[in-house]
Image (cartoon, rainbow, N blue to C red):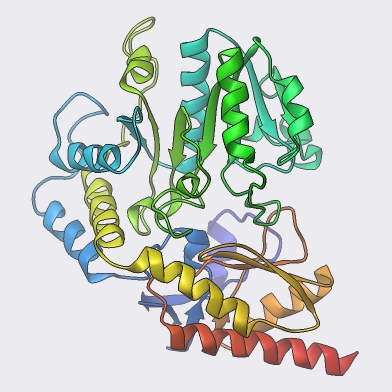
Length: 395
C-alpha cells in the first residue's frame, strides 16, 4: 500500500509521514498494525468531535438513505443545507444572516473576495503579513510569502499587506479598498491572537472608508476558542465571516456568511456570479449540522478553555518558551526549529500525533478534538515532556 501511495497519489512534500491508516475513533488513529496514536492534531483542526463521532456518523447514514447530490447549488430546496444555513444565522450576530456553502475553506475565501469586490465596486484587497488563507490562486495571492507565490505568478493584482496587530498600518486602508481580510487568530504565523482591541479598531477603520472586513474563521471557528466563532472573543462583528475545516466534523466544507443585502449581489449583474456544483452537498450539510448541534448543546466550548489550562500546566519545560493561542488552538513554541522537528517526528513513534505550522518553524501544533479527555491530554503532554528531556540529555 505504501508503494502505491508514493507511485500513484500526488504528494505535497518530499517526505510525507506515510502512516498507513486502518481506522480512527475518538481521540485515536490506528495504523494497519493496530497501533494506536493519540491525535493532538484532529486532521489539522478539522475533526472537531474527534473521529467517527456517533452523532455525526448517524447523520451521514440517515441522509445517505434519502438522497445524495441532486442539483447544483442554490436551485433546489434541500433540507440539510437549509437547516445548516439557518443554524449558522441563528448563532451569528446581525446582520450575518445569509450563508453560501462551498467545498473548502479556500473556496470560501475566493467567494468572499468576489463578494467584497462586487458589493463595493472596488478592487484593492488588503491582507496581513504572514497570512494563510488557502492555496487556490486567489487565496494564494493574499499571502506575502514570495517563495510560495513566485512559481505561480501572475496572481491576483491589487493586493496589499499590513502587519497584524500594528494599528499605524491602518493608514493604508483607504476609499480604494474593497476589503481587509485577516485571520481572527493568525494560524500559519504561529497562533497569534489580536491584542489591544485590534479587530474592533480595524472594523471601525473599514467602516470609515466604506471597506468590508472579512474574518477568516477557518481554524479558530466551531468552538475551538471557547466561543462558536473566534471573533466572538474580541468585541467585533465582521462584514463577511469565512468558515471551513471543523465545520463538518471531518468532511470537506467551506462557507462564507454576510448580510442578505450583500449576498444578494450574487443574484444578478451577472446572474450566477458565484456557482458551485457540490457546495451544500446534503451528506456534508447533515454532518455539519450534527457537529454544530453537539458543540452548542454540550459544554465542549467551556471545556476547551479548561483544557487549555491543562495543556499550559503540563507543557512546562526549558525547551518550551511559550504556549500561544486560545482554547484548543494552541502552539508550543520551542527554542529551536530543530527541537520542534525532533519532537514532531519522534512523537509519532511514541504513539502521539503532532504537526507543524506553516510559517513558524519553532511551533508544535496542538489542535486536538474538542472531545479529548483530560486523561488523554495529560498522557500526550507526558510524551512531549519525555521527548524534550531526551533532547536535553543528549545535548
